[in-house]
Length: 438
Image 1: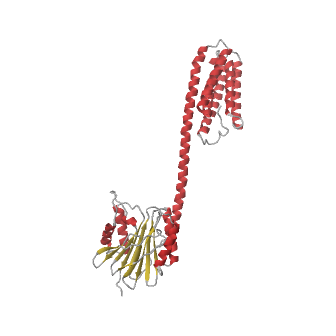
Image 2: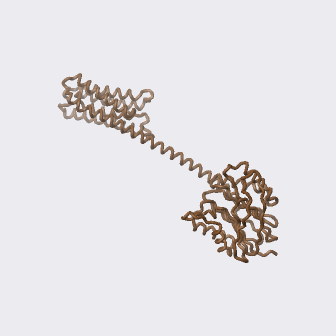
Image 3: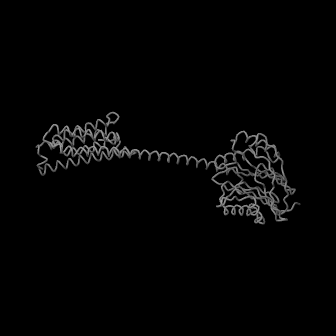
């Protein structure tokens, strides 16, 4: 019947699985035939020996035929010997065996059901129907050869053949359709898993690259307590910060690439690698202009960068800020215990072919605190979809300003996370003046 030359391998398809079932069925038929012969020889069943020794010969030949078929399907490729040939030979053999063992009442006619199933398995609904009608034609032929056999038997068997062909063909067709859907779903799932693995490896690579360019700790600056903290919304993101220390001053750079994830991380990493080459400590305006020109050339049209450069001089109270479209810096004054937002903006980077901007200055006396942050802080949302705005950030700074820089940064980040969900990368840099100017 419908057998596979790869039956001894693990089934990889529905087709292979059903073929294994048919092979098992063929072996069961052989075993049943052996048992039938044993009964004939031991008990000389009168109805089975109605034609003398012919029945025993037929059963013996039946066993030999099935064993030979099993051997052939192990050795012969079905591309060389199509399954329709096996089906045709099976029908011819069943007709021959039935003729010598009871005609229309022969037990060999039961093999037609296996042939119908094999036809449906290989050729679908049409195969089941065709093998069913072929079985019917064979039985009619047997009755025509032996008029003493009753047409009543034919009428009883024919409907079962046709129903078996229709039902088996339909079920196999539906099962194939379901299995194809299942295989397609599994393939899609496998492809998505591979894509996810690649994405995770890319994220891990980006995370390592980004961690390599971020300062492990702020450099020491006489008269100041400085702390920095970066919380990514995902494994990597578009936030970055840098420190450029000098002899009597230091620049703090905080920036944010629009978007988040792998693409933003690559852009922020490239900016962090490029900025030191532009020497912003000696020439901040020129450095920003050259960086803007580079970003305008290579960034997608919907991507931009916001950034603040804060230059702190140890010899004076002045802090100079270049704000490129970034959220305003916040300053807490120890003398008044009030917080002020430094609302002075220039255009972001990567928007226009040319960038120009002016700095602004703020004085930091003893105990004063400068807070730089990215919009991940002010855009955090609570369950009511309400943003954690600048006013709330001012209140948090006012509440924690008496603490150390590291404690201020941790307190603000903790309160924001407790208030709601941080949906974007959040960077916090705190710079607190701890000594009076000499």
